[in-house]
Image (cartoon, rainbow, N blue to C red; front, side, top):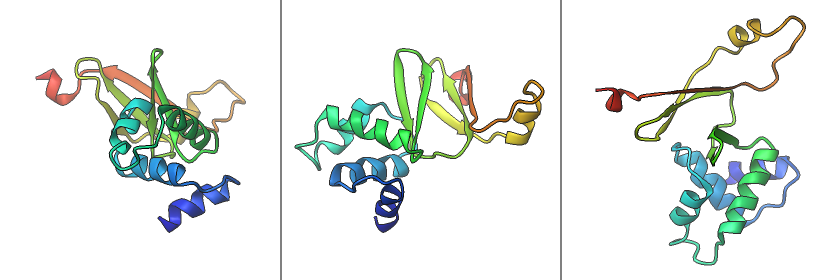
Amino acid sequence: MEQLEKDIRSCGLRVTKQRIAIYDWLRNHPVHPTADVIWKALLPRYPDLSLTTVYNTVNVLAEHGLIRTVTIRAEEQRFDGNPADHGHFYCRSCQKVLDFDIDKPSVSSMLPAGCIAEKCDVFVTGLCDVCAE
């Protein structure tokens, strides 16, 4: 918890119980949830937590680089507690989102001449190993 508070403070944000709870849940549940999933997961422990607070919090945490916004499908925004550059695989059958490593220098080498990659979002859609069987 101490590290989470430090992360939040280092961005110039005020530490609140809602921010800690949401950030902690995302860091410990790498399932790429929607705000609604986060809200439902935290509601038993925080009955006064509103869905609006969850949306506002994930947007602030993403703005400050503590989490990532994952938008593979235009109609659905998901969140990732791992802010490091990595790829996301979306299974079109079960709708699971899985992480995979990317080689940022390799991706950078594919860019037009003179361009510099600062953040890398790679999305791949297909069938996961379970659905492909």
